[in-house]
Amino acid sequence: MNWQEVCEHPILQNLPFKIELNKDGEIIMKAVQVNHSLYA
Image (cartoon, rainbow, N blue to C red):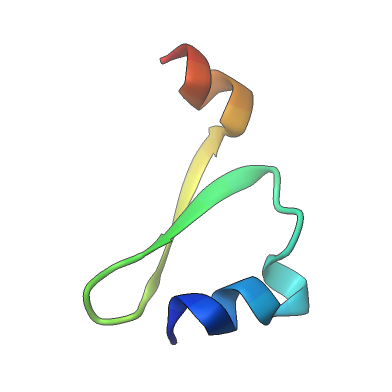
């Protein structure tokens, strides 16, 4: 999966947490909410 596919995927939109892609195109989900990560 590439970043464009992630952005267009309906299930991955408006999540309450961050996601990232690793070098193999696998999704890494961060369980920390965005507000908490900004504080950290």
